[in-house]
Image 1 (cartoon, protein in one colour):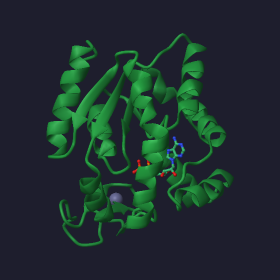
Image 2: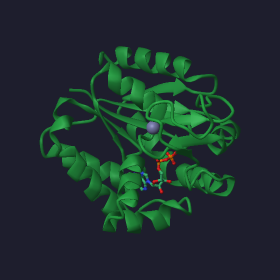
Image 3: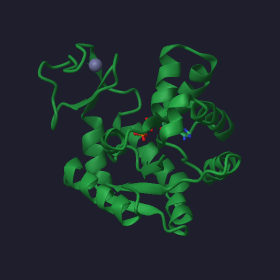
Length: 219
Ligand code: ADP
Ligand code: ZN
């Protein structure tokens, strides 16, 4: 019943690492970005509100985000453990999560920190493409789909995310440094940070994450 958080700058590759870790340990994958994008696609009230923040590289307000996550954590699939991807992103969110978990006597077992340099992020994110239908991720420069514009997994259309343009990516990196990076110290004080460096490739990054989890006796 492992409960993990994965932290890293936007475009650091935390989503890719989260997917591998989630499969290895059979965890539910809770991505707040994916939850927001789903709501935007379905044009729910939440989605319409979230879109205005997301498109300018800002954070969706804490109360909205916290409620969405609290609701998601109540799903049955979370009972056998989960990895939170994109949450918490602010100190207020981290404290709200602690309080929520405390109600059931639970706690976060480890926080994975994915480290990637800004120039590498800018290059990877602005060349990223995602499938409209299944969310699979490709990259026109480094991991192209077999047929340009078509998803290898489901045949859906691959597109650029509306927040993956250089200007918004720059804003997202600033937002990350200001609001989210302080969380590294917050969790470091508990001695539960596990690091992976994603500057070279995701296999190297995932290997050090797995070693780190083993060091915390979590495998
Ligand atoms: P990335 O990590 O690559 O920026 P995500 O898919 O995790 O992408 O998030 C996309 C956007 O969704 C963020 O830029 C932000 O506007 C919003 N968002 C995601 N998670 C949160 C959160 N925990 N709190 C507030 N806003 C969030
Ligand atoms: Zn697809």
